[in-house]
Length: 405
Image (cartoon, rainbow, N blue to C red):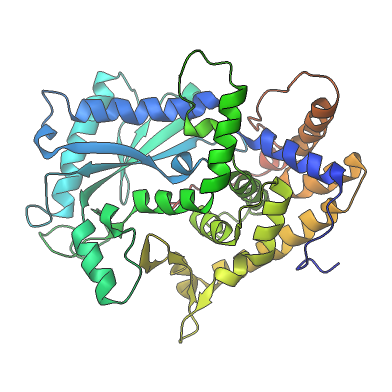
């Protein structure tokens, strides 16, 4: 089978992919949990007694929770990783070092943890501080401090002849490994999570608004109560969640090589062309996503950050060529697995094929969910994936992407 060509998808395969997307959706309360957590921290940082209130710290979510592409952990040992940024809007790089900014946030986060009776210590990581919630909550929150950097980023990108349309939301962030981490310097690492989110939403804007209007029409909510964005699911988001789960299962024993989520998400969003069915979106992405990987003159792979074209998401591939090889290995496997399933009409055979890519437990639940969607009106609960056979048999814990999406 030529997996580079879009297969003719049977109605049964379409139903199974729709059911798989539903199975991978996390419960709404997880999004509510993330929102409550970062807003609570933001309120703490801006309380009257806060030592940093005068710097106007603003906390907002980034990563997969912001993008709506979160998938549940494969096992109960894994945590949901909520990524957030605390922007200090009334401080500049001329006033302090990265180290001092990191320290200022760390002091308040430790006080917050104590006030919230959180038993686990606040842990410092390379770029962020981590709040570890109670074991039963099954999540932690990584908070990266940053300073507004839009004006400087605009000049930098224009000077290099690069797209600066999203530069206004750029920030400068902290990084322990940066050569000027401990001294006051003009040189800081850069990021632009709000710009990336704007770009990503732009790739699915039309279908997102259509789906949101449909939800509003069907909603039983009283009055004009708004529908949160996390309740709207587009084919692009669903396809990304499916591909992330396929990747997680494939690399369950090779965590260091697995393609990072920001690369999958970026290439998928580039390849998405507004398809209104999950299957069409999935195969458009699988067929075309590698076309958006460029090669520099020295042969280096380049996957540019759409919100900061000077950043290469594949920069580690040069030092670690096995990661590039792993990406293309995964893409070939995903094309083959989903193409073989797409042409089948027997749901048990489809489930058997899907099991290789998404886990046997998930595949069986997908089959039952697909049957329920066509038959009885009962709807199975959203798929919090636990204890997949492969996960139980592996001692390797999946490591969270540091640039996740």
